[in-house]
Image (cartoon, rainbow over all chains, first blue to last red; front, top):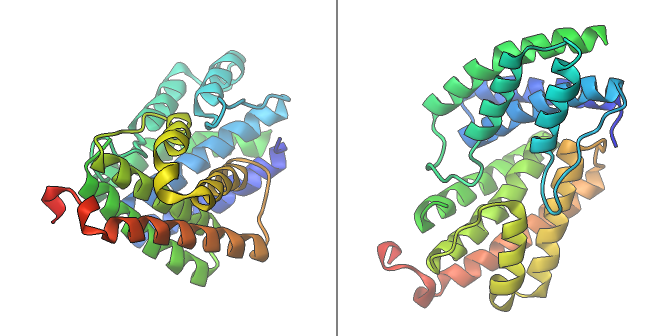
Length: 130
Length: 130
């Protein structure tokens, strides 16, 4: 399992790439993913500081357990608010990597970035203080 | 859960993104684009036979039960490698070496070539793509 500083380093890397790709109007699918990976690593850096690491279903990825741990430990201890968990859940729900709703376009990724940026700002502030 | 044309269009776009990211040394984008190139290529094949994937575990099951006879054991081995490499590199603690990225890209290229070879056969195209 990754440690707090490893998650923080990856969050920094992914956020730099996300912003560059967003400015360059790169493939929206990839911009969306880089934004989500930034959010994920910031949350996991805060969880790792408390010795918590999300699990994954077999042959899956850890988004659901990350959300559960976020509510239990980061909101439970007052670091984040319910609205932050709702925002995380919405980012996961709207990140349609199986393109059930069609291929993401520029308008989608602008909406996705606008939704994620305030949460990323709050998580970065908390991560710097952790 | 999209149609054949959308899955294939996204796979082709992501394949170009992977190649471009490799030349720029942007390994996270190369890994993400490379994996999803193959994933959406597989989904294009599934769409030809009215199948959809609902989760990554579902994708693995469909691959082993339905696609392996068409694509071969090497493809299955490569997909498994790509899936778990992406999860470890993007979600976990690992920072892959240049040699590891080279191997990942080779496997992604080989897998996508296998999919394209299969799709080139006219009898495998849907009527809408003829």
